[in-house]
Image 1 (tube, rainbow, N blue to C red):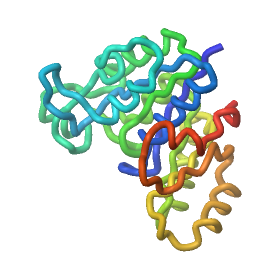
Image 2: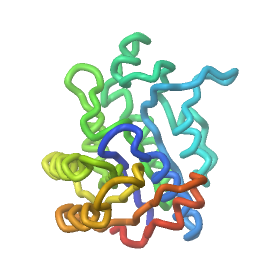
Image 3: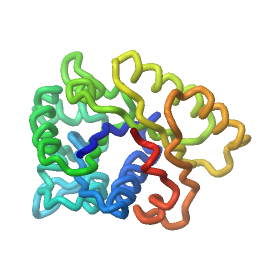
Length: 226
């Protein structure tokens, strides 16, 4: 039986991809087939094969299914700016409909464990009045929330959890990613998050000297997901 999740974060640059790659690696260690999608990515490098995004490539490296880059990241833009602005500059209509078909095709491959990773936080704008959260709603996927643990993370995490619930989606679990090791009262902050987020904590990823999917996977508990 296959399982699929939409993975989002409390902000940008809080380790969403790091955790996603770790979850995919943990799934592979458990003997599961894996697939992943990064529907839209800005901040891509120009290569002989076309635009390539480091986050999408990191996800692709943990996919056991033989996916093409376009299957993983159908919408890629060079400027490292908000996706809707990058798409507008490129003359591309970035809508939920434009992302829905490739992500459904990815899900149709029926990998044992599939992750669709958003960009930035939950309410990232697309074209018109669409948001990236609307894609998660259209796909009707349970959500995994990556909390970047630093000053202010409690407010960001709880507001995001509330928005996910208000959008009618299940919060399947959350991961604490320690991005600021000097954050005061880390244990108390994590305890508060655990008390207030209505989903299991899938793990706590410390500040790692060498950030690899293998190292991150050691701190995650995949079996806590429904």
